[in-house]
Image (tube, rainbow, N blue to C red; front, side, top):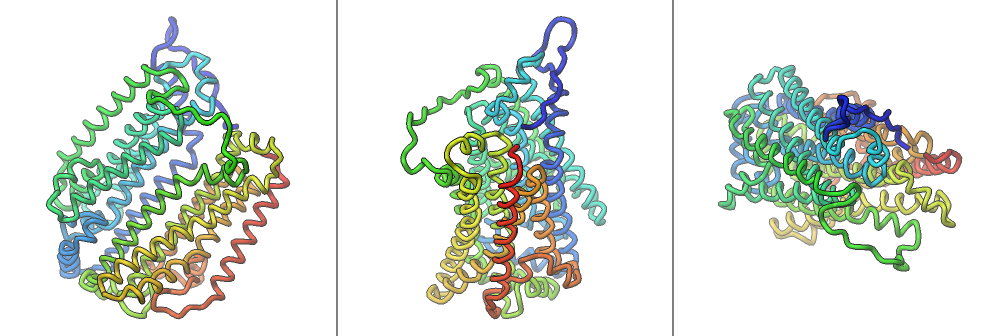
Length: 545
């Protein structure tokens, strides 16, 4: 069980106020998130800084950058995927490349942080335990928002500092940091609202994630050149790009995020005092008195717990694959500099520019699919730490049988995600070139070739879960972060080959276009199996908790 801090003392002489104990709960939240938040902040900062650094080498001249910006503005698919290009400076291109993805990451960080310390703690009974002492009614909500807003502020400061250290203009660096930090803060407030609406942390995350998905969809339609550009102004994610870092720095747009965040936070506070502990404002549908027959096994329970997540990931991969396939035909104009073409060919192979483009992006999809595999493999650790695993194991079910269902999903999930991305990419590119019959199997096979490397990353998470469960989350995500940086940024940094070989994705055949060899895939799969067996052996011998 997670350690609980000493009960907070009452403020003043006469009882408690609604915020009594906020500071103590905030300290406890920071202690519990001492791995979670630094990992999020490090990854988001590293993505921005590494992209900015790589663009300096890929597009060294003003002419290269101007030609890239012009080609992007004429490609609706690329605009829908990554947003508009407001300038041709290195900073503006960095914002175009990864700014929106980082804004979504900051939003997820804010949502998860707030819900973890409000609705999830209520669901687990921790707030009831702490609330039996001198604790204000809104202390938990206030503490979670303080932690989330502080994390967003730190993210903004570190991103700005990293860009300034890379010799980018200070004004644009501060605007970029503010854009991403404000996106995280707005959706932290959204998480605070959804935590009051439902009596389940999973439902609260789902609703908040749906709001984030809607915001991204509005931005996508608004930026696609469909004549509905006003939709971007209805999206907090769109506001991040409308701040225009390094391209005019429209600071007044930040007021939209500030006002919205303050209004949503105030609404969450009002809702918090209108409900009972452990209850949500939305009516909850009672479950069945008896579980259906198909749910009466640990494997079926694992599927029930993870199916919604897999569905949303699959939808995201399908959309991404379709956009990549639709934009491939005009990629030659976008890669107008020799350095950019060299980067694509080094990451994706030298069999032709379009094949290299697909191969490079499919590697990135493989790393992303590995993130799903790690998350699915770590789900049993969450069940264990929340003491739900003991309920399952009280029935005639062994530890291996309990965790096996989650491992099947961790193995099947990356294959499904990459398969769907390969299918949609092959279909859209084939339709544009009039050669679906040839392009679809090529891109599907290229995507599926990444699966063994994704399995290996999930195997690392399983091994740590079995041998050192308290380090499973931090270790699993840290290893994946290092591998992602090596895979994506390594070719730009000209790292030695022995360093690049640490990444399992280095050993995957560069498809489409490259020669296929099965041996590396067999070895990667074998290592994944060994890691998984090691983790299961450790799970059988250690204590739960």
